[in-house]
Length: 195
Image (tube, rainbow, N blue to C red; front, side):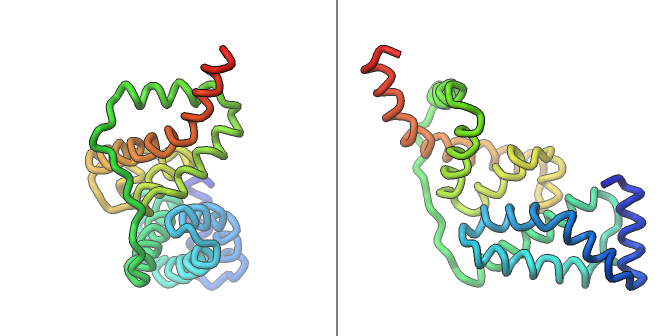
């Protein structure tokens, strides 16, 4: 959606055009739900948070100043709504030990993944991301699957781009630990069969 289309859509919603709000939901419902599901790891909670997100968007649409893309602002509302839900439910996070991980091991993981068919790779990564803490899975989703820039993500999570970059690196290291668990049997099999 172009910036002009966003402005026209926002104005139509503010003026009470019902189908304009339905169009906004239709455009962004998959993005909001995907982020919520990756953070909350529960379908019902993700659906509830997605609904809450769109209610918040409707109520605070006049607060959107247009200094970022509409999608970035919607992601930010969704991200904060997820964080509120997590705090409310006091979920504990899955912690992965990363202290002893090296850059060489990260490169080995990346090289091993290159040998997997692209769709299998996406499925495997999504499965592993689901095992990460909510904030890590959200950052990886926004960066790799939604292909947002560090600046866009920093606006969503309300942080500095450098901080997001550090958190993204840590999230990749955690992901690498989990990926290694999936890939080790594959590497042993290739070694034993001489492939």
